[in-house]
Length: 153
Image (cartoon, rainbow, N blue to C red; front, side, top):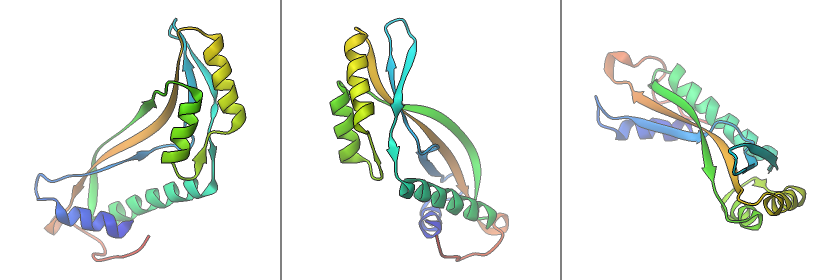
């Protein structure tokens, strides 16, 4: 990933070019139910395999490496909630199974989501994921320090 970030930084045009790093800030999304009165009930979480945690940790290390090596600096960063709104618990389970690697919605969570949707009329099911976004400024010339041409991660 260090190599991918390095290439991305070479592709943007200085001095105004930017690289955007956007990815989950937490490996454990939450299944929740929004009630008509505005309150939120926690349904459960996803089953997350160790591989997902390892991939996210590797991405964090790669970003830290390019910052420490002086390839980029962080101009801005923010964390926000990202929501997916399925029409049913089955749809959410199928979406996760089809689109996500290393995570799944287990049967007890799916059954609980279905039951809670039936019990609370006018409610809305969603998957809430914490996402981080960073604006990276590629450094050029004298701003740039450290080891250039480094490969890895």
